[in-house]
Length: 145
Image 1 (cartoon, helix red, strand yellow):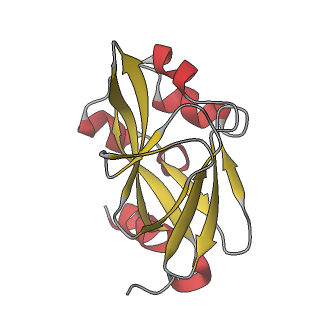
Image 2: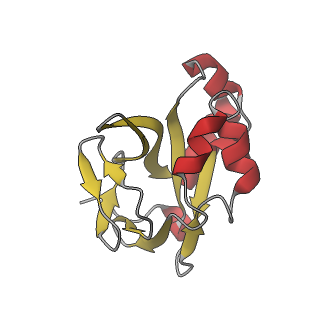
């Protein structure tokens, strides 16, 4: 059972985005790749709240922006991870296989992945994936590289 990171900060770090190679994604500034969460603060995630972040992440796949709602989800820091609640009719996926419908919530632990999907025919296709990590560790790793 992983404890909360030092200082209680967690992040959702971009680990996949349609249209960008892994190398291009890694070149993006940390403030674009990371959605940082802090203990005691519920954070809304969506185009209305992080427009510049989503615009930058999806610059090579702008059509995908329409599948991210203005307020897509709410994220809260828990002792062992992040509690994510989908507020949108557009699903989000946990570990690329388990969809969360509107109103559903799930506790995500270190290294679990939360993904946005677009509809292609009758199939959802993942276009943006965010992995749960310690904001402190992600910042340290960035400084060391």
